[in-house]
Length: 260
Image (cartoon, rainbow, N blue to C red; front, side, top):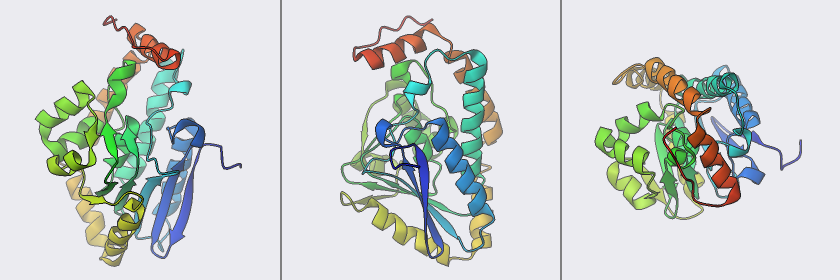
């Protein structure tokens, strides 16, 4: 496999494993290969007693641009549903993990990249990093559990603003509103995340496991929210506005949405 092909790289450092999303041609966007690789690693980690905590980051000083838009054009309803099913498998592999997860965010975490970061227990963000729920810009709604994870961190009111306005949230504002836990110097997010992950790895694993399970029950079941995301996103994948949003992206022009 060449270093330009989309995948997720794994590197173990003692009791901590680092998973690096690597899709250089698409700014670490989530292609089918990336989703599959991440689930595969999480399955392996689940049965690896040596690993006690996980760090997720992105290659080349970028966390993730979100979903790979080049793979979304002209999808049928069934293809859209299968895409959401694969995304759900990735979400569940992370959220159901018995081992704590730390996200190290450099550059930007947009769209599904934001969703991925919020599946972590602790988020370290570089001082120049930014977040954006950019789904609406291509006629889609948030997914990968975002309607469940985001309100838990920032309140329903702030979640409405982030999701509906697609504003870019800076690192400083993200810390202020509770979206992230820690700001690091540029280029140091992974280093700081490793320190936190090592601390978690040194803690008793069973309490960490049970704590994750307990917090995962609040305020509502993940299955209900994922089911709604699959319903709504499945419909949107075949809408005229999504086709317009994707077309405008590739044509580098403002989209013209018609609510259809």
